[in-house]
Amino acid sequence: MKRINVTSSSVKSIGYDIKSEILEIEFTRGAIYHYYEVIPRIFCDLIFADSIGKYFASYIAKKYNYEEIS
Image 1 (cartoon, rainbow, N blue to C red):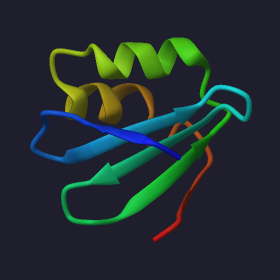
Image 2: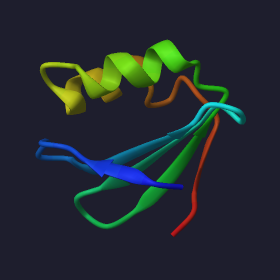
Image 3: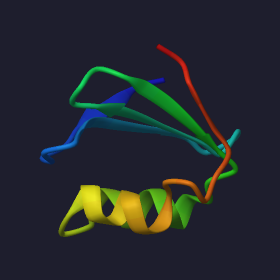
Image 4: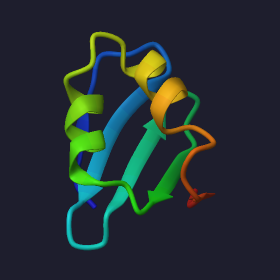
């Protein structure tokens, strides 16, 4: 999955597959996770959030099924 680099102290890059609704997040510490059944609006809101880390913590972390892929 292609990811785009973002400006965040906790997130390095973000990718999204609209067909499978998988959000891929690479954290600055190196881990990469897939978050499942994430609707497109959540991805768009994350990309354009004033604070990607805060948005992630409030609307994604622990709210979606996920797995570490790296």
